[in-house]
Length: 176
Image 1 (cartoon, rainbow, N blue to C red):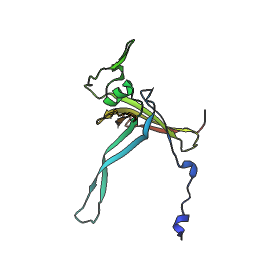
Image 2 (spheres, rainbow, N blue to C red):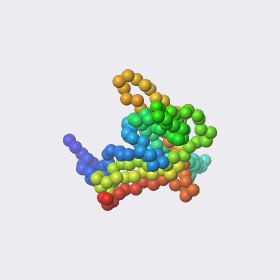
Image 3 (cartoon, rainbow, N blue to C red):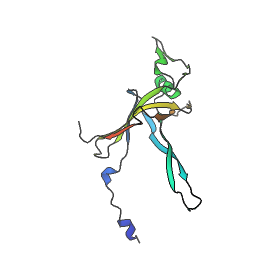
Image 4 (tube, rainbow, N blue to C red):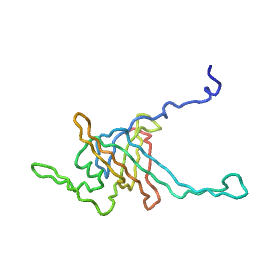
């Protein structure tokens, strides 16, 4: 038997979002990806205690971090360069081949990441996530197996711009 508590929730079905769309780095489409695009937003905090109180009496945020993770399905040399933190201009072409020269960067390369999802105002429209300054962090690996799709996992850490913002999220409200 259902209790009264189960009748108290009023879901707004149109605000339950699904799906993900295009992802770009510096305006270049990265193609398809596996497992979606994961945006993680976390903070670190400190809590002040008093010898005379049973619980915390104050708090402060000491840091905020935003990261973006995805697994690129299109194992192009340009996507590999991005995943390795190497400038995509390191990919050169001639008449018979394309070559990625694996020369490590001396500084972390910043890119602007933009990706899309479903709008919370109209399921037929797009929510756009724009992160102004992102650097590739951590490691990546690529496994070449027979009969299995090759993917490139990549993680980016977002940095604040001069206005103190990681970026924006915007819902389209009018179709073009």
